Amino acid sequence: MQYTLKKSLGQHFLHDEQMCQKIVAQVTRTPQMNLLEIGPGGGAITKYLIAWDDVNYHAIEVDQEKVTYLHHTYPQLISKITTQDILKADAPFESRFSIIGNFPYNISSPILFRVLEWEPKIEEVIGMFQKEVALRIAAGPGSKTYGILSVLMQAFFKVEYLFEVNENCFTPPPKVKSAVLRFTNLDDPHGIANKRKFINMVKAAFNQRRKTLRNALKGTLQPDLLAQDIMNKRAEQLSVAEFVTLYNQYNTHE
Image 1 (spheres, rainbow, N blue to C red):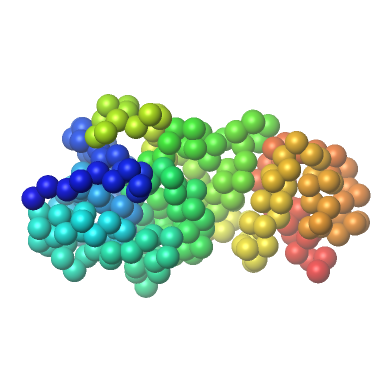
Image 2 (cartoon, helix red, strand yellow):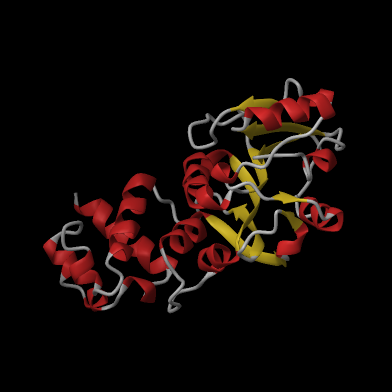
């Protein structure tokens, strides 16, 4: 049974077996862990994951053709795949779980916002991204690539830039470089009570990143907070800890 590649879904499938095994090896495997694969596609890494008989595996795949192919090729998956858009799906496990995936590059950022929603339940994420996006997520303050996802993911997760993946490992080869990241849940080290408010503040700070925070956050923070010296800085100059301090002041002022 064959399947087709769908450009509309940003599909590029891994065919390099050594790279597949290298990615799978990054999972922190524990007995009876719950593991979600996002976008298994043609099953390049799936076949290795389902060989782990001590892992509770589940997958979410939006493409029905790929689901049919996977069911046909790996009958043990028949009850283990949800055919749905990951951006609309509910968390597949009641208890904590880890995530792995060669994420479609056109929705990789929205997938991470989904991860942030599920964060209390997530142990770890092993994900492949466009290299430029991966570098942005892992960037530190003071860098031009440091942005919204850098702050948000690093506020809740330890972010590790693991390795790059050559475009020739894929069919068809993408026009961009790829890289694999690991996110390890730090279990809310900053005690952020209102995640939505924190996200909105960080987004507002970076949406006008050339402006000082005083101007960028004018419609978000109270006037007395805007008078602080730190407001002379731009968003890219603030560490995650400084963003959390701002958020705490913002949160207690309302």
